[in-house]
Image (cartoon, rainbow, N blue to C red):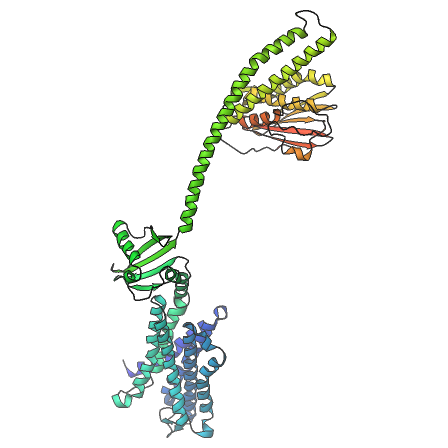
Length: 607
């Protein structure tokens, strides 16, 4: 390399330092560490530019000014040394976690040598103890005085202290990427010292150096830091995150080398195996666990979780092989997860599921027995009951002879009671069939308007006996064909209209038919006493008979609404009601116009 190119190296160093310093001190990315890094580059810039300009001062400046300019550049270089070395030490203690050394009196103490160097240098014309100039050479011909020698030695002592800080961090840090980076930085911190040793020993070695190479080597250190810290982010983020994640794991974690020695472990692993130490063989620390690992490695592939029982605790163990890029086995990463409570909870779930299955089977048996009992008893009751109703009807019609008024009333009571009991039995059978799922739909296509009108005509005689007006309103224009079970729909309307007529003492009962989209809406409104709010949530319960408003109690089994709800659900629809005490009740039934192929949500709302 030619002497001209060598002389350009300080200029290159100055340019790079200025660029790195400006990038580090950008307002949008400014932080404590970046500020220290920026100031370090600023000091390197002053140091480098003083050498660069000093090497050419004789040719670039007027001869009468070379002494003044040369000495000014010397002063600038000393400022750069003080700033670069001081901030390098502060940066080192910051990135290695010794931030206590950068606060309070310690930070002041770290800045004292550099501050004294600058102060003594600028006051040198007064005391002459820092440097003594010889001849007219601007930079090269000088001798350090007693204070200059001491303070320059202090500067290099700070550089050595920075190397010590990194070395200390390497020794204290467990094996991992963070330790590797500290090792690299500890070696890099020695580079400027090596350059200074070469410069100081040039008279012995006979090397002809145009300038102190320490400044250029310091620039290489800056570049290394820029890549490692601010470009890749390894020193700031990744190792810290990895170390924090590993140490804060609730699961036990350990890394062992290929020879079976412990490399690093976390607190959770130490809690399981208190004797764990870095460098010890895992077989000595935990022989039973080591034997388990050897056995599972023969039986399973890596990364497969197996269970390990230790001291009444059950651990899920996952082993992952760590290999180098060349494929060589470096060691194993082992994670132990305590699944004792999890396994116990799973066992409790299994036990509860088995108990639930037994309960379901018992309920199914009980339901089958109930259905069979209702079916058998209904059959046994209906046969004699039909005979009673038949004979009572014959007597009421006086087919076997005349009856006096009292006898006729008594026969009529028997006939009414028989018919009521038959209605209760039929409702019980319908409810039982719907609940057990044995009720079958027999679908056909019919006109819903005709069904509504026919039902109203069927109910009209009963309503007229009570002096109640029946109203029917058909909002579906033309013929509205519904594909559903007509018999079930008739039964639903008969139950709802029968209840309305039964509880209404005066006024009217109305049936409204409306069609919205693919659904039919059937409204049954009455002007009866209404239903109390506390009874609304129970009106569809079987055998429930709440006090309806202020109306006198009406005889019934309390099955009509429950049966109607089951039938509506069987048709794929829904039923709801609104009621105001003293004003009346409105039931709304929504059924699809086509039989549902699967469960779908209703698109129409009852109003």
